[in-house]
Image 1 (tube, helix red, strand yellow):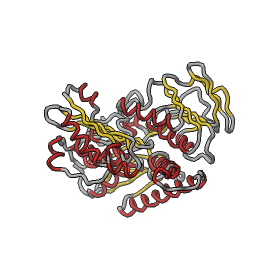
Image 2 (cartoon, helix red, strand yellow):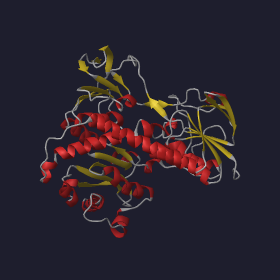
Image 3 (cartoon, one colour):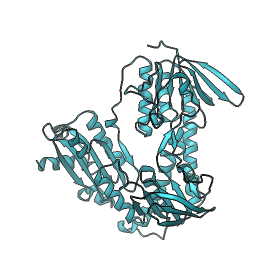
Image 4 (spheres, rainbow, N blue to C red):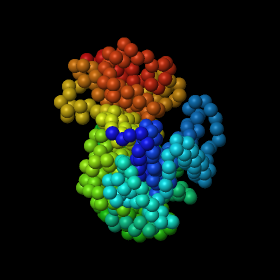
Length: 460
């Protein structure tokens, strides 16, 4: 166990590194936080915050267009992409400034530079002015991930985009090809299609969002098609035939050729471990290069921990922060672990997706006997009042005990409502617990949870 005042070096100042650093300093450690680029990591600068800022603008645009359904007459709304981008950048800069002040006020020392592991208790920081050698008691690696760059692509082309570059486009493309039907691809398809781009979404697998429940996948695919997105599954692209500043021609595996102004490649993420010096200390990595950790976030080298995206476990900012906190506690002699099953997953389509715990198919695969509870926003009074009646919630419930195993939903506020189910899964609540002890305010969207639970009882 570390004594008060000993050192922990945290490498990476994204959400995982922030969680680790803050928890360690709260426990009385001297913390040095090393960051190669900007405080806040991918979440703040290339992921969660900027994408949601843009998606919130898209959602408001869609709501203004549909205001007539609520008896409000408006002139035809127009997109000001420059203003949308300025708003997004202001939000990011504001949050980065707040984060810097937050860490400084907690007396966390921040060093900007490239960190390399020299020994399990020594880190070298490479800076413009030279090298700095840090002696430490424990090391927590939180270097995050970056978009995978596949072959057959000229990444120097201005018509080829990574998510980072897509967030900084100076003009909306008239036609956009998105390669990759995972969460990132689907969210960008939502954004650009609502703002007026003609989007073609290409996925080499037989379905988009393959990590999600089948009903969720089908529902989101239909939403995207209703928004004008062309979805091509079961095919990938074989090569880029030509490109310019605002023109790209893509040939698919099935021989079809597509023309667009830009092509956004979103085919997954890989770990940021290059130059980290893992080989110097013998930290184990898996076949994809992610750092191998156990449920306590420990690597195979005593005193070295890894958290967040760089482990390849769950690539979500809130999981990264929690795993960072767990690692810091364990570095201080605790014996904590994290249950990934209780972590809520959200997809910011319009409307949103929220999921947590097991699907019914997953539960049955684990030999649970299950029953289902389903409720629809179309029967929810507040959803009717708000004009947000599209969507559903489905619950997986253990048949005998009535324990809530998980839930998946599409609908207005799903990314907020899902936390009710995250709590239920974490605390192993049963249907009886909800019926007897929990009251949800009326009228609210959240009533869909209690309605789904009641419906599961009626189907017994």
